[in-house]
Structures are given as C-alpha cells and as structure tokens.
Image 1 (tube, helix red, strand yellow):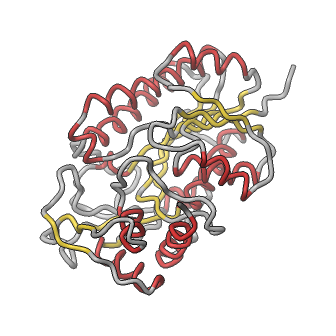
Image 2: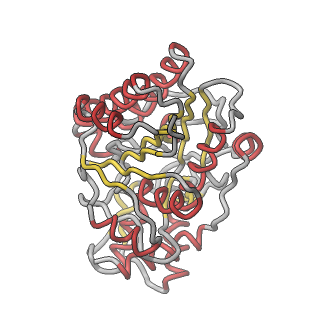
Length: 342
C-alpha cells in the first residue's frame, strides 16, 4: 500500500494559502497540491513561491463548488494525508453587499471537500476559520470557550456555519479528524519580501490599504470610525504575522497525524493576545517606514466589530504553538513586499 504523503491546500494562491505552502515546502517532506480558481488571487503567486523555495509542487485550477471536479481531484491523488482548506471569499463589506456570493461559495466548497474526504477516506481536515465568529464581545480577551454572538456580517456567518458543519460531520463520521483555526487579523509578508498580500480586487484589509496608500497606488485611506468605546476611538484587533499563521497549520497537521486530539473536532485561536487599534497600527507603520500616511476619518463601516483580541493560552498549551513576530516586524515585512511587488 502506498504511504500517504500528499497534502491538498485549497486556496493555495491566496494570501495565507501561499505562505502556508512556503512553510510546508521548507519544513516538511509532503507532496503539496495547490488548488485555486483565482477568484481573488493570481497564478503569478506561484512564481513568488518558487523564488523563495526551490521545490516542486502541483498546481490545479478548480472551482471547489464543482463537486464532480473535487471528486476527480481526490481520485487523482490516492495518497492524500490531509486537507488544509483556505478557499473562501473573505471581504466583510462585500459580503454585506452580496450575501449570496458568500453563502454559495463558502458553504458549498467546504461541503464538497468534506464529502470527498469521506468518499476517498482522507482523515485529516484543517479549516480556515476566523475570530469574526465571536461577533461583538463584551468581555476580552476571547478564548475558545467564549460563547459566539450574532455574526456581524454574512462572511462571519459562513465561518460560524462552517464550524458547525465541521462539528456535525466529525460527530457523524468518526473517520474525520478536524481542526478549526480561528485566525485573528493576518498581516505582513514573507521576510524575503518576495511574497505577500496582493488581492486582485480592491483591498479591504487594513495593512494592504496602508501600504498601497504609502506607495501612492492609492491616494488616500480611511479610518472607519473613531467613536468606538476604545482607548483612541478606533477599532481594536489582534494583528498576527501571516508566517506565524502559516506555521500554525503545520503544527496543527502534525497534531492530527500524531493522534494528539482528545476528540475528533478541535478549535484553536491564532492570535498574539495583544489588542492593537487601527490608529496604533498606522503609527507603527509610519515609524518603521518613515512614510506619513494620507488618511481621513470616515463613518463606521457596516459589519465591523468594535474590539477583539485573543486569549492564546489554550493554543500555546495544547497545540504547542505561539506567535513570534512583533507589530513593527509585521509592518516592516508588509512594506518590503509592497516595494517589491508590481
């Protein structure tokens, strides 16, 4: 019997997916298969990966909402040891404007991949979740047992539903060993400056907006609301370096492969444990780059949560993972990437 050695990475051309592929290629011997339909990413990302790490990996263009195509993918690779499922639309304002797009894509793609896992007996599944599942929280920091509030956007709702699907599948099908990783706010770029966040569509995340404003690709940026009940009135988030998050996926996969799970569905927060306001993030970037940003104050944005940051103690103890990069290092790497791309 062939030893299982392939890891499927869905959304592999995306921001977090591509950094995870880099970490997998650098730190494991797995055969990596990247699956993407390039809805908000580019095939050029693979060239970035190859500049950083000289190891081959397979590339498959596929819409995961195509169930037949997903089954063919799993049939082709008979030695799949696990799936890391990133593929999803992720822009909060767009999800408010076009909820159908988010519910249709994010839910169907997950269901199809899970069905393929069952059909082809793939046991290990890691799900890209989000701190947005917590909604507006009145007691901080949040831990994995914090009750979930009403989702503030259709995007967040798809992540809540995605976790419920995972929980129910794990209960119904003991074959599946599953983990939901709740990311806080991924930022930064590979330290080489050769790969980072470069969305095809207009950026909606804070740091690429900051760097594109600094490089004059955008004339100005907005801070959406400074009347929140926070220390400076702007929203507070737990920013975490994308390479830290990427490394966490390898740790999670090893955790599953070594049968360390106490049940076949686990949840882990991925954050630094530090709450940083939007204005503080801007100040950090201006400090490390020496560039003064042209920003204006705007009204609150629909779907935004006031403040959220993580209690990291459970992840550190149980998973054995801890973020290592500082906010300044995050901003410095993002700026290095911005100056290198395009």
